[in-house]
Length: 335
Image 1 (cartoon, rainbow, N blue to C red):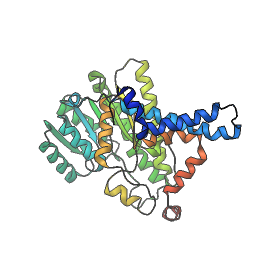
Image 2 (image 1 turned 30 degrees about the vertical axis):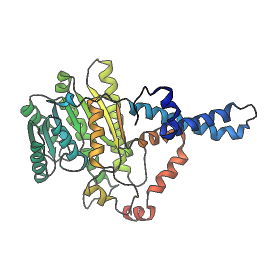
Image 3 (image 1 turned 90 degrees about the horizontal axis):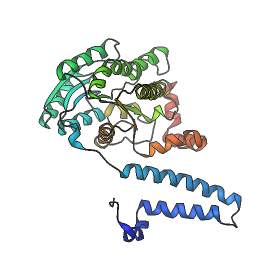
């Protein structure tokens, strides 16, 4: 990507890149709409082109500015959940390279020990861990207290853990739904409530790693999607509460696609054609968003557009979702 300030010479060659193609499309759409001889029926597709390319330009300008300062994370005190694999593991490694003090938690102690060892090699000044099963309601309190004892306070609470339906439980059963809500929603609320006083003192940040299924519902994932939609509602409301109370704690909601980890890939094998996002890149997007106190992060970025289209163009959205699903396979699995 070329830097800003390229002047007229840069503008003359802009058509060679994505921004140039976007500008050409906008120009053609505007010409079609404003032309005196234009047929109203012809202007409707042009309006759609103008709308979509305008949204694209907004995203382009949003990602153009990058005020991320890696030095801001040196010495930061971070509690990271779901740190044993996938995006969580990569988050831990990024924070370690940047010199943050870490408390890591996940379900499996052996995996955590491996991640802790790697973080120390990468230069983290302090790394502690606590194995924890977020399906148990009493666990979040122990995790937050452990982090406060070890680090003396928190600058970042990064909520990344997730759970699929436990083995032997049907995904839409009451038992399975209750389990999903405890792991994917209630534990987030508990951890946040317990860590918020320390984050308030440090003017810290809450980073919530969610899913596209918390913005756009899809087939055969109703309990999981319900928990993720509830996350969006809870933290969106909490952001407003903190704002009106002049509490300087940032909340960054991160909308990611399919997790880049073996368990996630196995759970959707034969069901979806969607590809997992690379863990290191997704993790870096999350860290940048949290460090810059951005209200939202979308990775891949096109998920932002899909979320916006949810209300505007429901039928095309449904069509796109169906292209990602092997409906026969997933219906058989849910039966």
